[in-house]
Length: 337
Image (cartoon, rainbow, N blue to C red; front, top):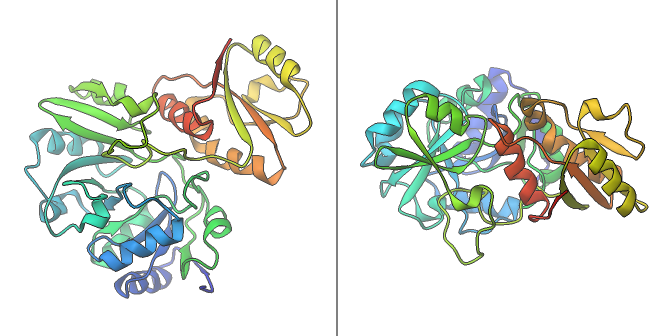
């Protein structure tokens, strides 16, 4: 057990956190997407500590975070031109590219795959921290495996207190859902996990866009996956979550029929004027849904919700990422009205 220290985003504390990484320890740190659980990506023992802290299945690959995209050639090979073109537009930022790894990346980091996901955060604190570490950083989200991802240092502390030595408090994460993960097939870009950089954004940049099965469909437990977040039940509060796809009138009627003690609804801000049942709100726009989603799922636990009915978000733009996370939080329970 550790005494978990909360560090600031000031340089002296970032240096302290980077020293812990150099010693083979694991540190919680902020990014623009969600908080990550950082360890030296080249050190199998440090990566094993990440899995242990999370209670995460070891066949789930980790994303490697770099301070600059130009470093990619140290850790990957046969990098397609499409990756460089995509990086010119979206890097640094909330996008992860799956490419063929070099042997310097241990198998435990890549989940036993011959590929690795690489990204460069745009978050100022994350960038400074990774630079100070001087090594590539393997970092999944800094939550217990299966529970909602953390978008504040307090969320990380709630899950990781006693499991890791330190957490860097960089405030709330402005995006709120994990990075878009893509792989490359010829000139096409395949989205393995949707995020803030949407399929429409990538298409508008001149690429053909394909979608992996795991974006909106359940993947079999035995299947190997190229990206985290594709396979297991993820992002889930203790309550049973059901996505309810219909207009507000249909949604309200559905809640009326299935209401019991401990029922809360996740609704849009504009719904509250006429909605008569206990609720928590998660914004109106897709960007607001993304930023608020994981905090609201954690709030459901704090208020003792037993079942949660979630209004279905739009699947346009970053809305697809919100829907993808909700599907996993709901273990794919969707009621289409």
